[in-house]
Length: 372
Ligand SMILES: Nc1nc2c(ncn2[C@@H]2O[C@H](COP(=O)(O)OP(=O)(O)OP(=O)(O)O)[C@@H](O)[C@H]2O)c(=O)[nH]1
Ligand SMILES: [Mg+2]
Image (tube, rainbow, N blue to C red; front, side, top):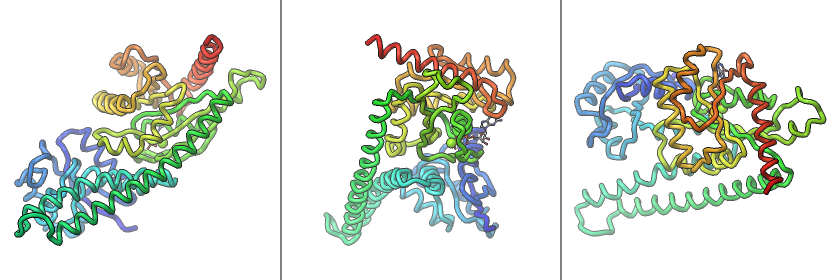
């Protein structure tokens, strides 16, 4: 099997190193062969400092199999150009990496369209930047050079692509709204799963709905939404409370996600946030520092999408690998006003309790509905 060997350049922090490595190695047959770290990746010429860029140049010239350099930060078109000229090797930034990973995992039409929309938005500022560079380097003053003409054409082309993709996404959105209305009419109670990528959403979804959707340790295994009935076979057939409950699984979050990427996946994420109850998963098996970073990154996305806090239930997942003291400690760091429960999809711990809470919340909603 062909292996893609790459160099990673990231920040000198464990979280950044591990996460960037997981992102890269979630791409099929990608292997990080060497890691360079830099405290600052926002310097004008190369992102990284010139000394570090020289160091990488040395390394690349001595190894024959480095296919790409991946810089774990946003880079401008100019910085990429400068680095590629120096290193003689393709360079990609964090956003390009995430887009490539999304492409490799997308299975549905809508997910593909959402990624294409993010891609167009990723390219737009690069083209603008190129236009500026050209007008600066152009010998002729004023408009009208060939380079500018090409940039204009590319820009218009991207804009056309963008409105085409948005139209198609809007169609998908309308279809979804229609399903939503049908569910509302039938009095369905909707429960969604949200949280950082790899927090265990799909594993829990599979247990709650007796599904077998793909789960894995790699990042962004799920990119589109699945809706299934809650499996309530352990409840009596006549128990009306256990009926008409739907579970929704969807794409996960990641730290430092640029606004336009959240925007591209907005309708998918919004569908989850429109649920009656939102299960917000936190992987409790990780170090406290990582948990803190993932918790606050997830909050940032939830806030950007204007989540209704009163619908949230925090789920500490994967508790089969942690002790009770750590669970208490994690819980003590989290928002007081939101209920929390600990579960393990592996051992089944807490699953019955979770189902009971879901049914209870459904009853509460019905009571509210009857009262109003
Ligand atoms: N030990 C343990 N591992 C778990 C548990 N739940 C999930 N995992 C593992 O965690 C990893 C991620 O699980 P997924 O269910 O794919 O996570 P996800 O949140 O759907 O991830 P994305 O779809 O990539 O965003 C997999 O390797 C699972 O086997 C659990 O209760 N205990
Ligand atoms: Mg998943």
